[in-house]
Length: 398
Image 1 (cartoon, helix red, strand yellow):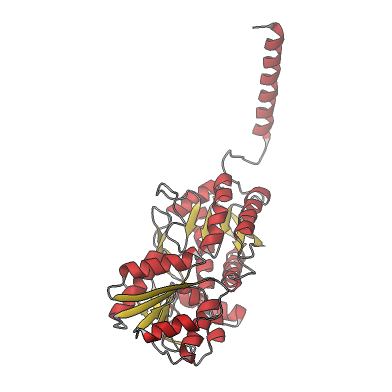
Image 2: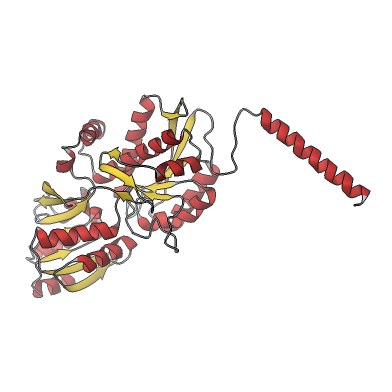
């Protein structure tokens, strides 16, 4: 080895040794994986649809997250290995856009150095964020993304940093199919689903696969469509017993209104995308009768759950309205991250990820929640019944 080379290597070794010594003197511990908690706060990012087509859901979730955070902080914060740390929320609007959602995830993980992310509301926006969350090793917990593939890699294994606090479309679609058969006694059904989202197409496919009666017709619409009269008239002519309409309140509200206007009064059954007060505003209260939808949070079911009762009272006192489904899901998501931190005695993002995988029988306002090996939530489901625009009952489906 040449003399100059020996000197160079010796110099590099000395620099490395000095760096190690100074690192040992530092009071802050560092890790080569994920984002560490620093200072007196735990940073939770919120990647949410606060504007755009899904803003109704995103803003409800924001309220649930803020409410849970205020409660936690009022009691001193999260217990991180014996020391209480307040939660600091960093909230960003993804505008119901996949490209914006991906950018927001990168900002939260890499610039803001958050320890965990809550969001998104929709499957499409959440899927777009996954590569940036995974690269940064920061867990993202979606309160409501329901597509079965959302938490899965192409090889069928769980996405390492992706979780959900709700059930999957195949379970939700199957529940609707079972309810139509057993409770509504429907034998001839038409499907009218949203083909602009994985949410709508996934639910339609799941329902069709599990419904034991006859699906006489399947039609689709796209987000933003306004006129459904031709499709509904064809359904009426085929003498269907009921319609399964998986999608979001913006279009389903119009479908309900137009169905009733042409004298089609059969039951319309949908999904948790209908669980928003704007559905009735769009459809009209009188038209919103004989309407059913699957939901993870039913007020009438929740009244039997002390945890949910406490939440509903606190929500009404804070926001002067009844607690909606998406606020409840986001509220649970915030407390699930708290539990993950406390179980691991660390707010490092990789440790929080591990804590989320170990959640079992979590006492949530939407029921007992267990995270399975695919990072999906095993939890109860109910079907709510609307009559004259008001919830008049609910049925838990087992």
